[in-house]
Image (cartoon, rainbow, N blue to C red; front, side, top):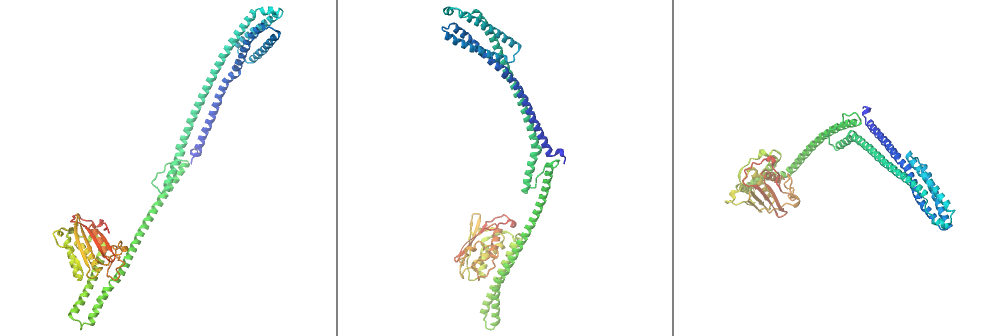
Length: 532
């Protein structure tokens, strides 16, 4: 890093300029103050004392003729003595004013005028003294009747007053000129100081702009970028890396930090993806393990009972083959077949559920135009044949019922209604009524399957459509726990919905809603889960 381009060198240069600027302002202020002081000293040293002295001379010389006149008209000696003392005081004050004026430096014209005044005043005083001497040698009555003023003293006084007036006017004019010169000097000094301050302000502004643009602003930008990097924002550009000073070093360090942050973020993202993948695989393994455990548990329980029944009947047939009548043989054979059909239905439910849920639904969905009324009646008839003592009330054949057409897979729909009817028969008391209705409501067909069986407990109603889940009150009743899960999947595949209303001990009601005669080809990949 070059020393001449370092921040320390730049700041030192700026401070040196500011220091020189302060010295310049001080020197200019002192020079301006000296010029103002020189102009004001003329007024203070010369014109103000001269004006004061001349004012005293004017006042005292003006009072002297009045005292002279009072003396000439005084009646007694006491009064005359008092007036003489007053005139003596005036003489003393006039002499003091003359001494004060004489101590001030004056030019030749002023000195000539003053000398003229002094000569005329001396002449006036001599005339006054001569007049007083004459008046003291005559009788008082004659002195009182004498002329109050001597023509010689009057002329001398007038000449002295004229000279003093000219001197006063000249002094006033000189004082005015000096005052104007002082004002001019002050104005010029103020202008020079103002110009110096303006130039100093320009220099300060330039220095601040230089510091801001070359030092402060880059530092602020670097700080902002470091804050953004701290907030894991790596898509930033870092400026100033080409500088050869401390800011350039900081910018290059920020670039290194950014690159490290990018590498860290990429590694973190890769680790997060790997962790997510492992988590998904673990969850899938856990799900498969749970399904396997549930299936093994369910199969071991559900298949053991019908197998035990079949085995019991087989043993009975073997041991009593010679004593059984044809009717008894037929009855036991019927019970064996019924148990086999139950196991077959259980296996079909398991296989169908696995095929639909785990193995590509679109491969098993083949929609066509389906007469829903006829399909429901066929399912009801089949279930009636399987369970002779069941009371199933199917929808009646009518003109209105013939219009209940849907666009769907007949095989899947048959399996769906078969599961619902099988559950209704299974969980209803022997001979319990099961009612199936199908009506059209607007653009949908509503199918209701209602039984009066054991019902579903409230705590189980939200989970009965889960795979392998069975109600808490189904103990001792054969079932796989996949029937309602399969029903929910098929309903969702046909863009329909299913609702459940049940009360424990009073029965259950399943309400399915399917689109009526829809020609839309539903995408099984985008199917929505049925609402429960």
